[in-house]
Structure formats: C-alpha cells, structure tokens
Length: 93
Length: 469
Image 1 (cartoon, rainbow over the protein chains, first blue to last red):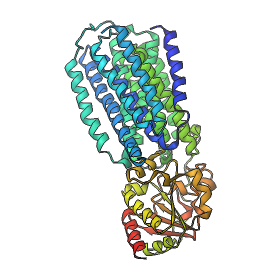
Image 2: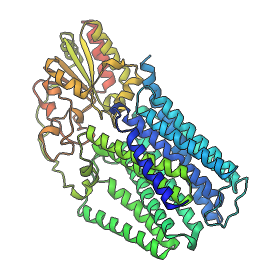
Image 3: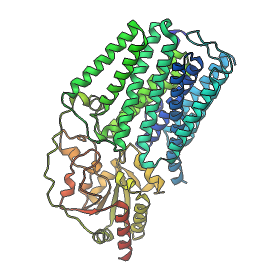
Image 4: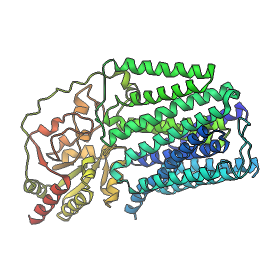
C-alpha cells in the first residue's frame, strides 16, 4: 500500500480515537482502559501472519510465543472487561 | 478468499473497534461496546485463517491452509487456557494488575512479531520497514517490562514507593540514549545481533522508566503503556501491510493518550511530572513527622454511639475495604443507618482503589445502590453539614498533605475534604501509611477516632453494636 494512503488512515484514526473518548466519566476509566487494552490484542492477527511465513525454527518459536501472548491479551482483556461491566449493569435494574 | 473481501472484513473489524470505544464511553452502552469489540477481534482472527496473505519477503509461499497451522492453533489454545481462567477468577481487587499484565504481554507480542518479520525480511527490508520495526521493538519491549514492574508494584511484590537510586536520572538518560543509538545502528547496519541488543536495552529502559514512579501514579503509567502498545500494533500493521492493525493500533494509541490525560487530570497530576518524574525526582525526605504522637482509638461501641446520634454520615471507602472484602458489610451498616433515619452517602474519590473508577466497580459488586455513590466534587461541599465521616481502608484520598505539603508524592491531587466533618472515624488495620507511602496528619486530629482491625470484622462489630442501641 502506498505511503500516502497509510498516512491518511493513521491520521484519521488518531482523530477518531481522540473523539470517541474525549468525554468519559471517571467511573468508566477503568473499563475503558481495559477494553482498549483488549483491542490491541488484535496483534494476534499479526502474530498468526508471521507464524504462517516463518521459515526457521527460531522464527516459528518466536511467533508462537507471540500468538500465546497476544491471545492472552485479547481474550483475557475482553473477558475481564465484561466482568467489570456486568457489575455495573446489575445495580441499575 | 480474495484480497478485497479480506480487506473489507478487516475494515468491518476496524469499525467494530470504533463502536466499541464509543460504547465503552457511556455507562448504558459500555457492556455492549465491549462485546462489539470482542466480536470485531474474533472476526479478524478467524478471517486471517482463510486468506493466504503474501509474505512481505516473498520467500514463504502463501497458500491455504496456513503453514504451521497445527502449531498456530495449539498456541492459541495455550493462550486461551492461560488467559480465560486468569480473567474469570481474578478478584476485583486485583484487577488493575491483571490489566497491566495483559497490556504487557500485548506489548511483548508486538515486539516479537516485529522481530520475526525482521528476521524473515533479512537484507531485503526497506528502510521504512526497518524504522517501524525498530520503533515496535523499542516501544513493545518498554511496554512489556514496564508493565511487569507496575504489576509487581500493584501486587506489592516490591515496594510501592518510588525507587530512586543514586545518579538514577543519569543512568536512565544514558540508557535512553543508548536505546536510540542502537536503534540507529540497526537501521544503518541491519543484522540480528544489533536488534537483540536493542530489545535487551529497551527492556532495561522499561524497568528504569517505571521504577521511580510512585504508587499513586501507577494507574497513569498503565494507561500510558497501554497507549504505547497500541502504537506498536499500528507500526506492525505498516510492516505487515495490514490496514486493520493500523486502524486498531492507532485507535488505542490515540484514545489511550486522551484517557491518560483524563486520568492525570482526575488525580490532579501533571502528566509531564509523572512521565519525567524519573529525571526530576529527588530523594524523598521520609523523616517528616514523628510517628509516636498519640492517636485516639475507640471501640466499636464508641463508633456505634457516634453514628446513632448522627444526622448525616458520609462513608469514604478505600482500597482497604476491598482487600478486607467488606463491601457487603459496609452496605449492611449503611442500610441499618438509613433505617434509623440517618442520611447516608458514599463519597467516592475518582481514584479510590487502585485505578480511576475502581471503587465504583467494587461497590457495584456488593449491590450498593448507584444513587448513594456521590462523586468527589458533589460530596466535598457537604462535609460541613456532615456529622460523621467514616474512612474505611482509605488514606491517600483524604490526606491533607495533598494540599499542604508541596513536594510530597500526592501533592496537588484533589482530596475528599473529610476534615470539614464534625467527627472522623478511621477504620484501619494499622498505622501503616497508604499506597503512596505518606504519613497522614488527619490521624492525629483531635476529632479523629481510630478503630483498628480488619475492616470487615470491625464493621461487623459496629453493626451489631448499632443494632443493640
């Protein structure tokens, strides 16, 4: 992909990222941080791609380690965020 | 699957992440937002198995099924077996350190991905690819080791006080310079050895960067490292030619930066001061006040009598309440007081607990009605009309040193002004200072009564004493 397209995507994503969380009550800071944390677990996709392309045992070993770590980040992150938010829901019947 | 379809599904996942962050910013939609995010991430992960992404180096052949498929699925299974039980079983009190740990492993994963791609590209890497790889390795490793240190601080595996060693700032500055220098070396010379040296130095820098941060600032650092990890994911997206990773990583990087600033504001901390504390930190004078001054300690009966004749009581819960698992008992006490016609509110400091909003989560777990939780700005003006403020396992968030002692680690943090209440009751395990490690003058105030012991058993005794009156 050409550099200009990538730069555009990057800059626009920065603005969207700023915009969506600009006004959030402190009550939700912790779940929001935890949810954003889970989203960057999508590096799992990158880890799977490099594991697919691995040619040596070293590359494969490192990419498998990356897959394990990224899975923990992604799945654990979403599960723990859901647990936090579940409690908020319970009280506002 | 065609490249177009693959990219379209990637775009859908990117939109899901935007909706997730948007949803997470509002109480009503937060849970749905998180599920949308999980859906997007799951979708992106499944799709990658159905598209033979061309190897950037052109060396590996790209065909379906993916090479090393069994290994990949096995590694995902291992990650699930570790991650899911950890997330399900963690006590809500220990949740901040789990988030720190999850963030750290994410940063580590990004750094590993960059290293593998670099090994794979070898000498064919373009300068831009190498620059992004260097960035990812540096920031990913800093995020990894820094998060491990924050985990250890929060888990109290090490001291929660700022760790400052002689000439520390020079060591840190020198490490940072060598990280940048070696980064330049990798870009100009290429080669595996420089990259591994870069990774090792970056890990070291992450440790040095977080060590001088005081306990109270740890949440800000977690949030910042979270944003860092986001940026590394975006940079890997560039190297791997994945629009999805660029969008997701940039979103987290940008929203994480804003969130870090919001948190710093809520705590009255300067972001700059927190980040560069390492360079400006001075040896704290820990002598300060004499610790042998008398304090007034009372019995559960004394507390019950005081409460029985109060018209308005504000409960200030802190992390100690959660550690003692006393959320349910404190609710019992509040219900009992309300049945006696006493006006009861919980004064919630934005960073009560270990992270902003943590206390709301902990009290929600005990089904405390939402309308009794009053935020700091609303509750502070009412302390003048409050007969009794009960501080349960909290310390730093009511410590007047934040207003009166320039240079102490929490100086400038807005506090709950319990000193304006007619009576103050502290439920504490001991005279040990709070997480930030600062002596609290309020404990020696003549209108303060201390009730020593485990918060839960103390509260239980107060409840039965109050029932008997």
